[in-house]
Length: 119
Image 1 (cartoon, helix red, strand yellow):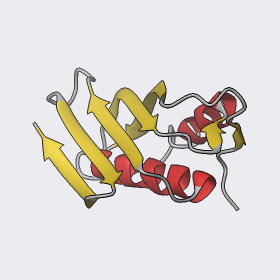
Image 2: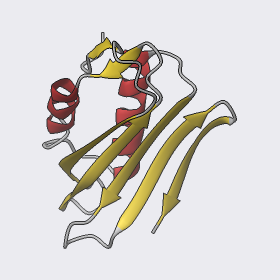
Image 3: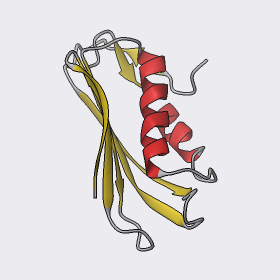
């Protein structure tokens, strides 16, 4: 069972973007870090339900993990909630003062799935 809910794509929108602030504790430095998580999908029949995405992300606040793990967990949860789609993009942008700025992306398209990182 997933923590993220969906709603029917009644209005046939072609793209949905959700951006939510997050924080977690770095498993390498033991320091808190924070930033934004951006999720972009092609909704097909299902759209993300915003409040459940927010609740899922808030569950990460006390977790000890890397920003790569944050990206992968959000990606997997969205994919599990919505099922197969043409495109799913999750970006974790770390902007806290303790850590240098960093961006990690998990993407899926018909061309394949990958995790990429930029510092």
